[in-house]
Length: 109
Image 1 (spheres, rainbow, N blue to C red):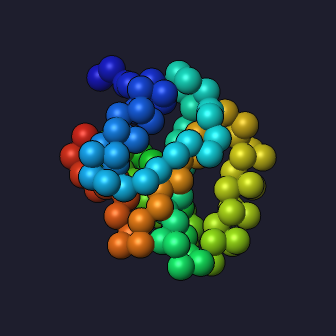
Image 2: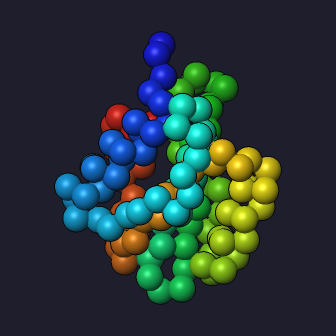
């Protein structure tokens, strides 16, 4: 199966969020072709969640899993550590008081 480039996926995701009226922006621009993507959900109340795409060995499908959740500063520390391991990492920040990130919608896996 052909995989989308990271940059193509990020642009499609940002467009889907924009259509839904959910503000989001690129915090860190990773490798255009194969960079991994982390999505930070900022609920604008001092809390945040961090999502990473994972490969499910049982089903063979990709899915989004929560890597971290809690106070925003703690989530930022996790992001900083991840960027230390992988400088080609994309970081997308989604800001939504209702906690919408759309990662569970079809086509975003």
